[in-house]
Image 1 (cartoon, one colour):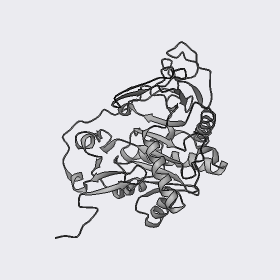
Image 2 (cartoon, rainbow, N blue to C red; image 1 turned 120 degrees about the horizontal axis):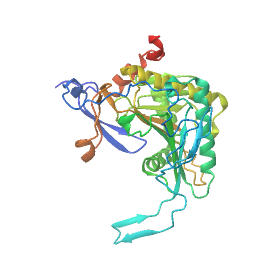
Image 3 (tube, rainbow, N blue to C red; image 1 turned 180 degrees about the horizontal axis):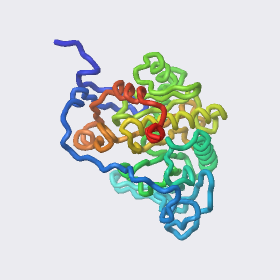
Image 4 (cartoon, helix red, strand yellow; image 1 turned 60 degrees about the vertical axis):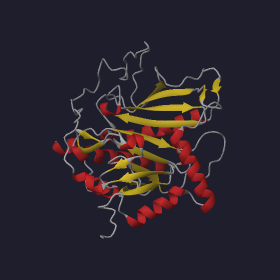
Length: 350
């Protein structure tokens, strides 16, 4: 019998941040594809769209008029999933039919006044402005007594359900800690209590030692395809220094984060020469008044594209009924991203 080989044989990998496992089936990456192919979102967009709810000076869906903003613009979501004035209440019937009122705040962050610029096409200075807004919003919302978690994220592209093409992100800040951050809180705390160090500090040291899954690195941040990645080109962006949230970063670290986001998203776009869709978000400590010394700030990027700009991964069947599964190995995905040019493909054409 042949020796076990991670690059050839089916195997499980453990995610220490969530305590969950995924199935890796590298041999399946050779199967032909005759399934659904997505339409690409490559139609040119104007710098300002008079019909866009998010462009400067335009009227939003609720009738309010956007200011003529020149940098980032933040406002309360007109159709927020969470509302601050939700009355307190709960339902509990036999311990099986349970519900609790959930209050919170939803906000929208327009990254730029330009309707046609996504993060990889923005300047490092403009992306630093986005990082500053993330930081300010986390500080402001996290200080509220009714908010115990602040989730900052971006859905990019129609395939990820983005309802408006103007480059923007969202904030959902709420009373309770949602599922994945709650799992990460538990796992990081258990590791910290056992080892006296943060889980992601030790994980990053292993990644830097092995270099197999490192995509990008600068003086303050490292991007890897995590060993336990579920999505084909999923990445994890980690600060070299153990900090719990954005407010603890120095100016140099914020500059380096802006540069890292730009360099990573350029490579995403260059991979299939398309405006690469993803869901991405920051995971930070809960804002419940506790120290959370075990928490280690990080960013997740979850992109769905698998083989080309038109072929995506679907989370169906076994993934819904069993556990997560992937074909291309994280090591192969990291190599492909690492070898891409750092100049955006649109600029290279000019």
